Length: 183
Length: 331
Image 1 (cartoon, rainbow over the protein chains, first blue to last red):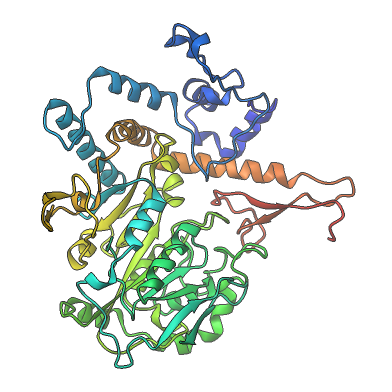
Image 2 (cartoon, rainbow over the protein chains, first blue to last red; image 1 turned 180 degrees about the vertical axis):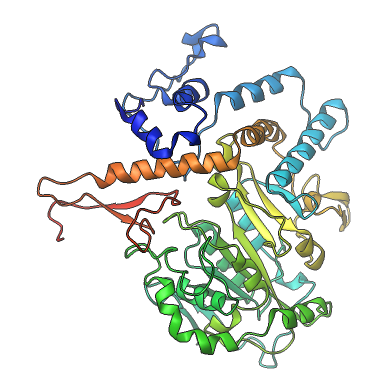
């Protein structure tokens, strides 16, 4: 996934050189931190003695370009190596149990929550509820048991005499597609 | 789970530009009697103009709200700014003042309280348009009510809560949640921010929402309860919001991995990430724009607000979205 010949200087000049520490910065960043971008990939031989024992070796074919940053960004070599180092430097226990390994994990979770709040300049203003992802967060917020609402809306005298059915399609120019149909 | 207290008079309103996962919340909301409404950019602009704000990030007010999601055809249709002018005067007089609503809101500890939720994306997944976060305060102050198409019940106290889907926005932009009128809920996926690990996200809950809403679930898993008896129906849940909502053991090894990711963001800094992504998007756009068929028909038809009013290329779009055309397409 090398850049097309001669494209880097154009890219840099368009960005304005002040946007990057040095003209070689992007190339260096790609080479050092994102070896997955190179068609040769990253060799596992550094950490696995018998590379042949790896049953599934995946390489990007030459010419492949990753254009899905909106879908997911790429992780850096620093991240993977430092996280792996941390993983192997000591034991990490289930934070719900007691003991030094568990306390270490609980401490990591506490530090992570604080790092998230610091990142968004929200220390002391928000709670960080960890979930499986954005969609899981939305689902957690949405799902309710109506009978246990603490602050219910008082239903009108007619109570629920009509059910709201949602029209499935949302047509361009007329997004208000809610239709109330008498039962 | 009962986190948001939907009621039979509740409204669940979403901006049309929302991600499918947000729209999916309506199935739950409607099942519990809430009324769903999709608000288009034009209506949202009207609501914001009555609050003196523009729809897009960086826009200052009247007329400058065009652009977001109004990307050629498949976006939200007509540019908001142009359509707003006519209805401004009448709409502007309808909503109660923010101060008045603030007063009722502060006295809303009684039982006759109706909670509504409005959800919007910080940045459009489709067009890359960024929304003005002033939307939050406008909606919290009740300025959305006049543009909802079903009559709004006058009784009781109405509280609007705002959900910001920041999955896309937070990936490439700085998001400052220190403002006093911040969103009540913010949702995130961490792999969008730093790639690894996947399967870890967050629901940020403002202290205001945490203290005012009974955010409690029915189901309880390991770690969420102080005491739970198996022989009889007795359970005492943990008081801390995080502990009460996170069932089972957290993916603690993923959290250890994610700590390295947060460190990367601290070192690289979001403004630099944003500038680089904008530059990449510009580059990709310019490369794709050059593609032509043999007969001169341009291959890509771009969506999103790529051009400013003067025709110059806008430099703040971080998402390239295009339709690929056949050579036989009409000009």
